[in-house]
Image 1: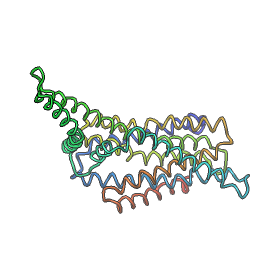
Image 2: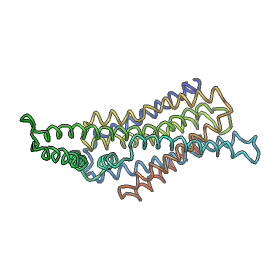
Image 3: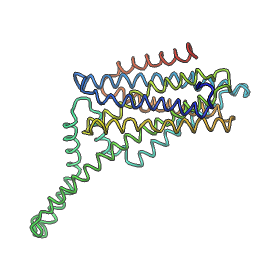
Image 4: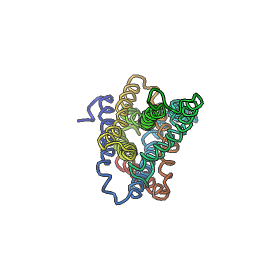
Length: 333
């Protein structure tokens, strides 16, 4: 039945499926207490991220780059050119998103410290809240001392009309601390959301390309959607679990975790629609989606999976993910 639908509807349904698996992964936050320790919890997450990297690497070639090169055979010896141009363009798109986040302050010292606390595998939500309070207190100590010193120099000893201005400042500091924590985690959600867009685009382009070359089939497009969905599963957890660790309720952590995948249906619609309207850009679009996905793997998934000392586990997860996606594409495509 789905095979008879238009590519736009197929792309939408495919990306709704990947979004559902993102939400399913985020829902694991409700069962985070079943892990005997925070260390085992982190090991599971790192192995899952490695699996995601393997799936994306395999999907990038068999479902995207391979068909893009096939469609460019008319270029003769330069048949690689559309794929190469699209591939680099895809990486530049995600790089631009990273630079946008940097301009918002995602890699500032304060934000990096908060995100690091959220990703720590050895501390509880309450411990991370205390750690982030200490981070913000250290940043605010200078301001508080300046306020108090200024008051003393004016002979007020921190008192004005019977009310301590230091206490007033502390209230302001608490508000700023809460705002900084919220901003840091929203930037984390935005970062993963930006990186999910190319995945939705890839699924949409995959369905839009059906019939345009021997390698672009309905089965391959479905396999690509399944593969992207499988790798989205741990990405949902990669958002909800850090949010839980810094004190968000399980429901709020789940909400923001599944929201990170909500952008994929929009990417799917854009990808399928653009291919339906402007067919000559198809090989460039396929390669663009592949370049964006490879950039995310190398720049984000692999470093994150190796950042907690579980590099071998993450590597084997990547190998298994690659084989699973290769099997889907070759054996079932």
